[in-house]
Amino acid sequence: MLAQMIYPHFHKDFVSYLGCNLFALLLLLLALALIIQHETHTPIVISTWRFIEAVKVAAWHVMEEGGSAVDAVVHGCSTCELLQCDGSVGYGGSPDESGETTLDAMIMDGTNMNVGAVGALRSVKGAIEAAKLVMEHTEHTLLVGDQASQFALALGLPGPANLSTAESLKAWSVWRESGCQPNYWCNVVPDSSVGCGPYRVSHLSQRMTDNKCEIFDRTDSEQFGSSSSKAVGFQNHDTISMAVIDKRGRIAAGTSTNGASHKIPGRVGDGPIVGAAAYADDDVGACGATGDGDVMMRFLPCYQVVESMRQGMDPASAAKDAIARIRRKYPSFIGAVFAVNRLGVHAGACHGWLFQYSVQDATMNDVQVFTVHPDAQ
Ligand code: ASP
Image (cartoon, rainbow, N blue to C red; front, side):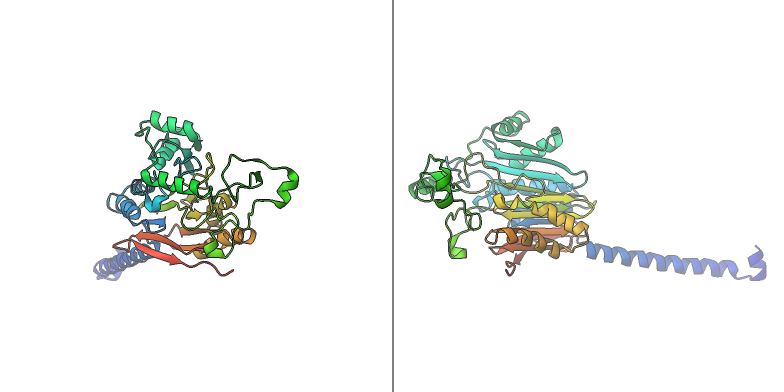
């Protein structure tokens, strides 16, 4: 009133002033939203290797249906299990020494750090579904072997199923006919580098000279020139490790694999080990890994990646650092990781092989495959 008495146009001018500023504020907010959306690239789905169908299914779930990151990871990994991606995910791949296929899988919810996992799962095809049952219906983290199968069947998963196929049994008999080469034994008699078992523990004096565990030389000779055990190579193992950030910023990660070909029965790889093949934390981001799980799980590379990002490293440096830590102790190991921060910025690093990972984010119409070259020594 007083203002209007002193200055009669106060009301009109004030309203138009307010209107202009509100308009400017709205424009600013819109621009900010666009910048944030552009910078965050979320929702996002990332998977090891060219597992394109798996990424599409997960991306559809999280982008079109507005589903949760956990469910998207489970849908994505289940797709690979059904498609038997690369022969190294799902049934019918990587027969162990007795010819059986067993499965490892994990799911991690980065909102509450809840985890479910199964190792050496037999007779059940849905490994990641079994892992999810462990996460959602028990207070445990990891169930293994026959008891994991019984648990999954009791809670309604289809089975018991035969996880072998004509191809996996053929691969197994070829391996037997080749004198069980390669294999994962060392310090045993008869000499595991020339023939099949059953093996016994060798005497200490023999251990020092014969057939010892060549931990620095586990790789495929085609790639590294020489090898004694040649058990871990390009062709004989892979994992789908997948990370998803959903529309609400929830982050999940998971894995599924049939492990390593010709593994010793009972072997569990890095797939179901939290922090080894996958890790997720809503506050930071996520990581997925693939490679020689027996070596990699000793370094918890995915835990390392996420913790490095928490300390301020960008995803590319965190991924490289995790690989470098393993390479320093095992110069010939084969492996790779991808890292993604909570804004959806991603990167990969690898050693001993060329690595590819697949991505679909909010800005992409289709899945894109990124190729990562091994770090220089
Ligand atoms: N890491 C898996 C394992 O060792 C296999 C792989 O990803 O290559 O079981």
